[in-house]
Image (tube, rainbow over all chains, first blue to last red; front, side, top):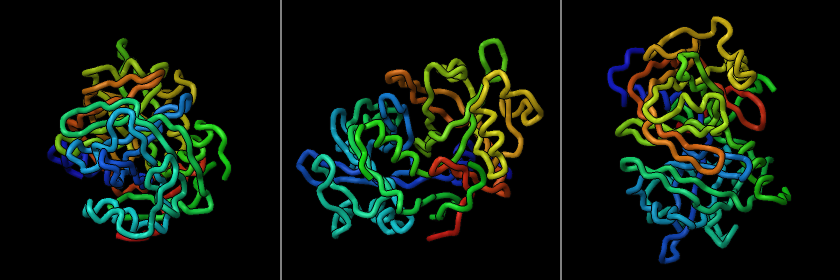
Length: 165
Length: 165
């Protein structure tokens, strides 16, 4: 495939890269819920347990990710495409409905996920208009009976056959 | 599922989170190839095109990720489980074989991948024993005819059926 610009190369390659779908939720300073869909949630270290997520500084949820704030990292299941879309659409509509309730740490927690981790922001690295957020994990729960959701090739997929252990 | 410690919660939740499998390669100061398997490669921003990857500071490849260094980000295909394992095993054996050749930017490039991006390290954030690396994308190529590889539930999988566009 012929690729002309670095941005075209970036977009083409990352569209080919499978990613789990996460939703990060927290609270704004006025106590209202904030959250967004992310495919950039990644493991950072196991000891101590830390993760990273990347976010645009102009995101409406960005103030909920300031140093010392707590958030919930949700790992979406295969029947939550609607949740993924809701949490990426109009900010004012993301918590309209019964798909969530106060949960871990008193923060807005989504129902029906594969896993949820309570975390505290321990580092923020701003580069250009975006930021990499380091999160210290402090609590969590998992529901492995729910199936995983994968975003790749610009579509939502289930996980396929096992290739190797 | 009952989870006792934050580390147990972290390990359980991230084992449930699907991830594409990437291999990062570069050169050590003596010109020898270095590289490692990573499931933490993530998109950071599209404009300018940037990505992040997380790495342990004690990694043998860490010197190849210093500020200003160039690396290749490889997106592995479904028939590259062996490459994933090779690039996570004994450091001295990772470039023994014909699975690579000098490629983009003159760096060690793996054959048979879904995509490859040439990138330059533009920020390094060290937290504890690990680091988040910000990478500016400068060139690349994709091979969408190769199928994606997903690591989830502690096993390698293919991608499953489309759930939604």
